Length: 213
Image 1 (cartoon, one colour):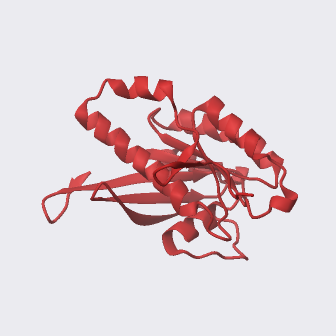
Image 2 (cartoon, rainbow, N blue to C red):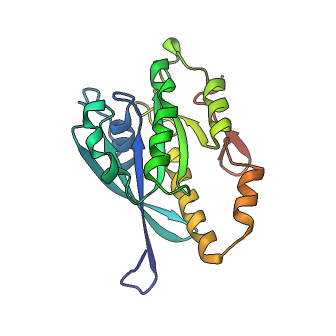
């Protein structure tokens, strides 16, 4: 956090995208940051990041979102990649169960390299591939509940829930920071009662599945 030119506070939070190769991390980022999708997207080599501003409670909050390759051979970037991260989207491909089975390893790596206060969301990407679905919504929801994660299914291809997924994580980070500033002792108690796994969509509906019907 730093003072901006107007004398207020500017929030800049680092968020990492993690998950196996080819689950769509880069396209999730490009859809969120630029509203673009590249059908021929190539594997990310090394690290890339985009900074995107979101308005929360009348304040401008900037998220610096980092994207790196999921392949094992690029694991050397690990420590620097995670350093300072306060949010993470753990992404799997709903049409490839092996990517879902890797989620626990990614969560363990996140825990190893990050502060425990990281806001985490489990993201089942490519929900447009319903006809070749290999991971059920129920399995995603169940794992999210078990691990205490937010959960949402997305499609970078048709933009389903992409904006919402990033904004939920960014808002949770902002709330975490606000709570720390306010020195609230009720924070951990609140989380233990209901670590949100169903993401609120608007004022009164609950959405944790990609597509209705």
